Length: 130
Image (tube, rainbow, N blue to C red; front, side, top):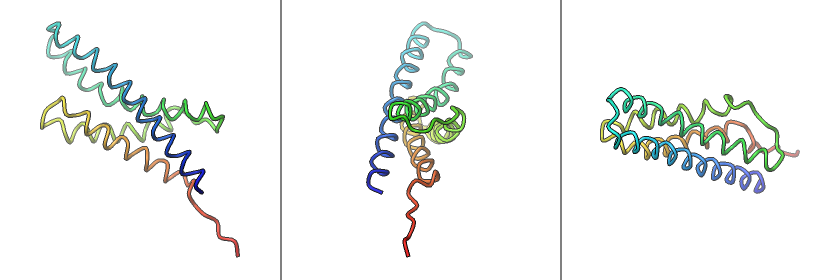
């Protein structure tokens, strides 16, 4: 049980780490576009893309961890749907307070969704021995 918890913690940590990389990459593109004076349509599209890019980071972090430890591999989209929902809801909740604050909503609810995915996967069910 402890080993399963440690592996899940490391999987979640790696997921958050890669989500951070993807968000920083998105932010570099967005800041460059904002400073270049692109139109409002491009800037709007960049804000819409942020949760999708961050969720991809969460997903790739899990996938790479599983690949590194030679665990069973899942389809990208089977993993992606969990952090995507968390990132979209987090961004939508925080966006009215300021677009640059979406990072907090995306990381908070994105991480929570990855944790829920780990719990739902059933890795923690203990079998009782009678």
